[in-house]
Image (tube, rainbow, N blue to C red):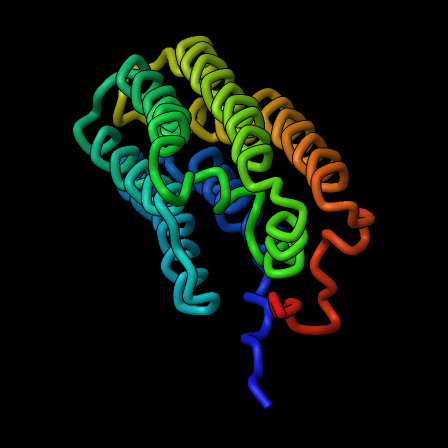
Length: 241
């Protein structure tokens, strides 16, 4: 009897927050003075946590994608800009460029066989993909599904463009001290903390709107109920047969 692969291991969101936000912010704010690590080493140690988490998450879940790679590149760029003692303008440009590139990549990938938005919304961690695909094929709604994915892609791309603009203005507003100083690192810590309510929450809200529209559209196109569209974590994904 053929077996289907188990669901990919879910990301630990608490560990994500601790390694990517809490610990770096504490190190930058409290331990980047000359009494402790100093501005340069404080920045390096703070950024080692999100970089280390990215590597750990890949080793544990064996799963990466274009957006994850961009996140690691962003961390490395932050470290490089900090060690070069560049001012906040360059951090603002970098922080705006990363989500803007993701948004553009989402739009460009609409012409590809597998649009990037599928990795975010229509994947087998969330959706029972074989069951949904079989229902779409049975009703001959593949073209309508492609149109639905395009609309959802526009929403997700818009969330990244909004994030880019908010990233830029937040960095320009908070990063005022010269680069390579304890004051600059403290401002960088403040920016990391404020990025969650100011940037992450609006972006996540738009992502949830996109997911809701996708689920509503799938329900109409497949005739399945919402609980049938979601993947049941207690059992492997349905086979297409």
